[in-house]
Length: 147
Image (cartoon, rainbow, N blue to C red; front, side, top):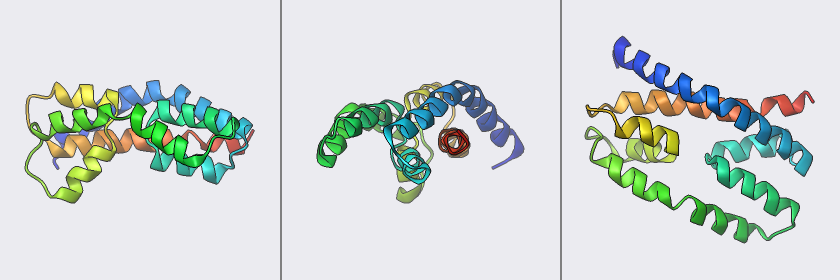
């Protein structure tokens, strides 16, 4: 990855991350009021990298819904990501399967819109973009430990 590709990914990721910050911060605060520990809220942000599903899960946890229902709900809400990753597969440079699985994990509506409009097949852009957003999402849970 050269400096230009790194800069492009960082620039695209930063502009989206600014919008993610209040949403992720609110999630951390709501997770605390729901009764989740800092570890549980952070784990949820790491493993369920999908804002809408995280908010829905908090409501379902509060209501005492069975965990399997929460998992199925998350699957249904995020089924559109299968279509997004299939569409992006054509735009990606040939790469190992494990790397493509990593790209697919980080797909959100915002990353899809940025990546779908790219004219070139650049995998490093994907990693930089998704990493910056992922770190913002997970890092925004930390203020709940202070409050």
